[in-house]
Image (cartoon, rainbow, N blue to C red):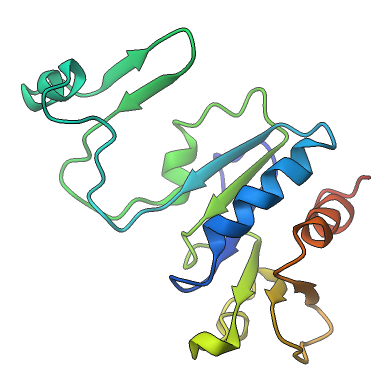
Length: 174
């Protein structure tokens, strides 16, 4: 990732595995150590962050791109991607302010080349990703499994264990 100025770590899994649920517990655990965490989430849907009838929506519909919405609490920039195409993570990193962050977590972009933790629940009947992805550094699962020695085994239901793995083995600190 040429445009990553800080460490970037992905969470790769099939839909329904619990990526977002885990991340909502993992982020506070990492922040409690003083880290500043950013997140990039890939969506396969045509999402809208503004709504019909709102000024920002109407201005975007009129042809403005990008549109920036700013308040004293947050900022959002909406940019239309034309022609429509699947986003590449490295390209999106150009637009992501990394200046005050220690780590970027990524949900999705599982086919791209960057370090990832695979989340796996055998009960979903989906195959493991690590045999075809050399960038997976650990597998977090809710079931026992035998993994190659290059991979760490984590418990998907223990976000603190995963946070410790990130701090010690990925970031090299604690």
